[in-house]
Length: 163
Image (cartoon, rainbow, N blue to C red; front, side, top):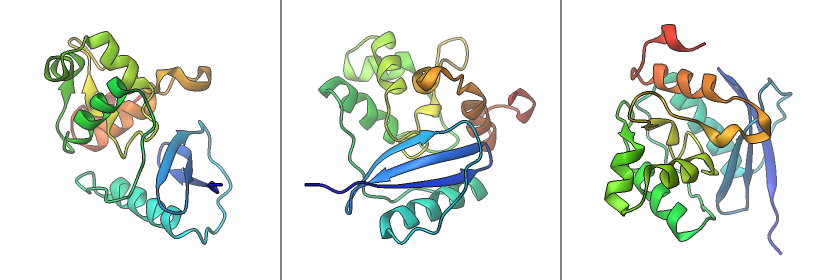
């Protein structure tokens, strides 16, 4: 039986929950509010926290964490393409759809179900005429302010557009 460990941390845009096994990071979920932080002795989660804070200090930071993404074969293809997008760069849903021979709408659906946003940087995937969506409104919350923060942090959009 696999043991899952959870950790809550605060980033400049709010709290996140990290979930991992002993060997791999499985999820990063936005919480929508600041959270009490506890000291974590789980080595992988402690390293994930360290790397997320490094990214928040330097948008060119490159993550190096073992992770596992559970999803359909289509979602896996989309997430593999997203993982290749470097900081400060973007692709459109249409670009990824062309690469994997899919539709932009299906690519957007896979982006919204990405279990490791930021680390697998789905915020770098944009619509043809705008920012597109973000995190599929999980929990009925509009996560677009976080996407705008991440894109402004990387210099892709003006910080005036964060709200």
